[in-house]
Length: 113
Image 1 (cartoon, rainbow, N blue to C red):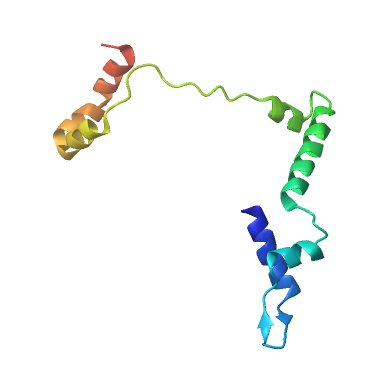
Image 2: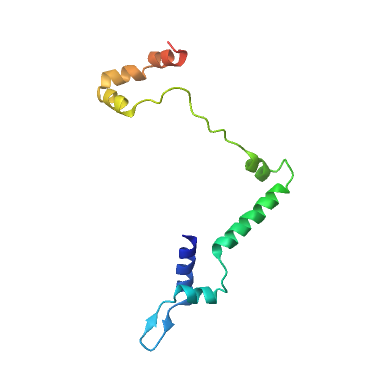
């Protein structure tokens, strides 16, 4: 995707090529010749690698270094997930839904009663 976007931008910058039959857009190989064969994906990967090295050389108390080492610990809650179909049916009956959502019921659920 990045290469496609780069070529589209370069086509707009370089403009059409004039020929005897009329104007035409540059072809991919012509853009690559003008661009000296440089690859945007390799450039971005190289910049990311340089940035990572910069972060690794930082002092331990710097915010970018702390964020880089941070592990969000994505764990799921225990137990079976609630069935959506069941809760949708219950939500259609207002009285039943309000009883489910009442404070007393929330306390029972929280304490495990």
